[in-house]
Length: 176
Image (cartoon, rainbow, N blue to C red; front, top):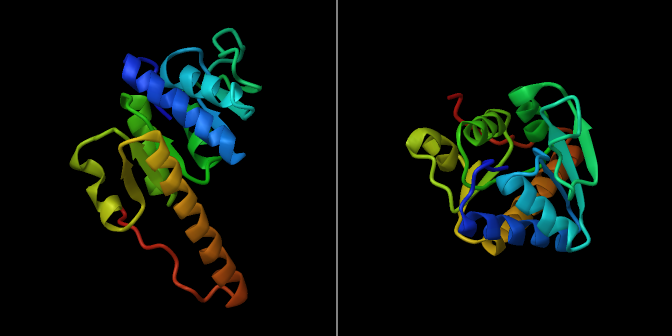
């Protein structure tokens, strides 16, 4: 996830992130538009053999990035952020604005881990860092390593829940 307006450095980091996601064999899901972080990460993934899914705010594909393999037209505007977040196992957020912040907040409130890539949204989300849902990375490589760790831990937790009949502790998180 990330902003529609991005600097050259942010765009390059998003491209590298997309490339690394593809190399892991993961599917890149983002806002699907041909601007900023969305376009750069989709390009990085596609040019490195990955699959890309774009959750578009419009009912048409007019603004879709040409690097999106599967454009999903929603007609939901910014409400499509809920689809982006709730369809993700882990959210990696690059620098962005209000839309990106809303995605981060929704991910955290729904118990999904978030990795912030060279992005500091201030102290509003500190309780989520304290409970282990919010993580920080300074490079795309570090972000992908953190995602791998989170996915391993999540699979391990799911396995424990299945093997103990659901008695293991669930992730604790702050309510606000």
